[in-house]
Image 1 (cartoon, rainbow, N blue to C red):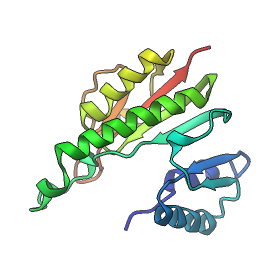
Image 2 (tube, rainbow, N blue to C red):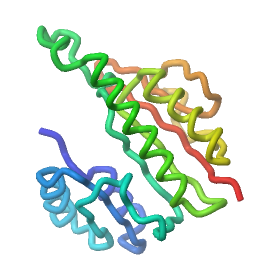
Image 3 (cartoon, rainbow, N blue to C red):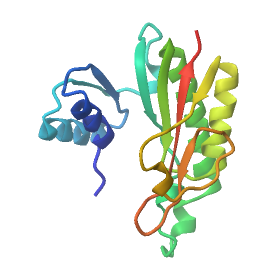
Image 4 (cartoon, helix red, strand yellow):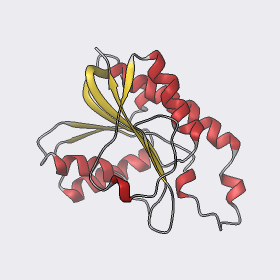
Length: 186
């Protein structure tokens, strides 16, 4: 069973419920699970919207954004699944990339100048990660902020083509994922 809102409720916990968090989810069932988990975790600072984040009005302006983009899930695949080729397809990857480009473009548009955002996927594929980020930061007057944290050297990683980004290699302890911190220039 997948937990919906884990990253969102963690942000609320880190801030001691003293920030304003807006969480967008366009799927009604996923939104209801998100609301349930928000309430269960006691996260009182989260406002939820049943909305495709690509369609948020441009008058919104955010100090920071976590874009946990929909993806192919390549970092979480069970390679022993005999039906893997039925669900993990080129079409899925292409659809994911299209959504990611639109979402990242929108996120950078509504991010305040001089502020930072995080782009993340549970994919380990170049085309869903570095290629999407490179494409959008070039057109959005943005730059990569190197990711650094205690213990980073202990994690299994895959090489990335953008210095300062981070990709965890899937293994018996970790699912694979990618993260990039991006700052919108003034």
